Figure 1 (cartoon, one colour):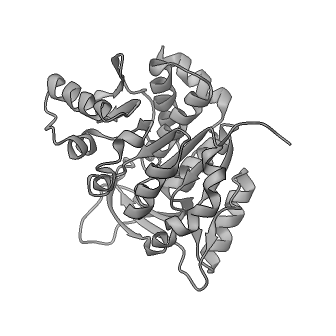
Figure 2: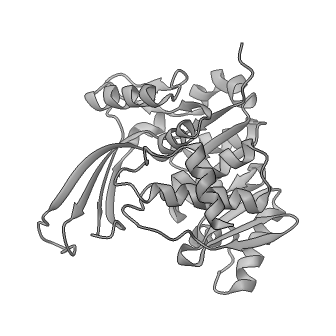
Figure 3: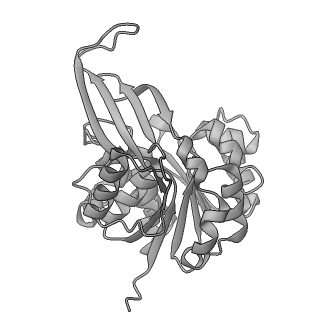
Length: 308
């Protein structure tokens, strides 16, 4: 039996439908452009990136019984994601995410049809508790029901990594941040979780201190063009973003989380962990797809060296 460490990701799996205009995006009008289908969902995207980085990854998600589910399951199998512990809901409609970007690849509007994710309850996760607790890392995301997030925070003993995703969904983490090992919020999500208005260096540092005071081990705060703030209980460091071509930013955060997990598995320090996250994100945004199929460990390490 293999003793290779594995990661469990608990979260959504979607079919993504992306529209990109050929020129400037014109509101309230039909725009000439391209429409692409790709496999998505925050949890699935993180798992996909981890699989491409050579990590043994298990995905606990929920599928319907429609054609989209068949396609998503086949896609997971093709890239080496183990979906054995996932749930299939009879007659369920597989989660779908529709979004429109501008010509530069920045998302402008989106609609998510993710009601099926509500089936990922503690009752579904309970039979997988041993699988979760024996993992090297468990990753959760806040598309999960609030009760499921609470259950994971209370019962998982493996290091728990979390992406708050949005300010609205970050509210589900209130009271549970101290049970998380590594949190990857952006500026607004950090404000939401701490009640600290972040408008300068002092308030940013204060917000991080508030997060870490809960028992959180590490915080990686995305600051947009201002870079990434990496903080633990001993120090904090600001890292600049990588430069390069931007094709589509939609999967950048999911790739960053995968990079942070990969770094933890490899025993990297705070600064190198942040660099791994930035490097993974920079690879992701160079692809039209939500997950860049060229992602791999060698490329990630190479990209990290350019950041040093």
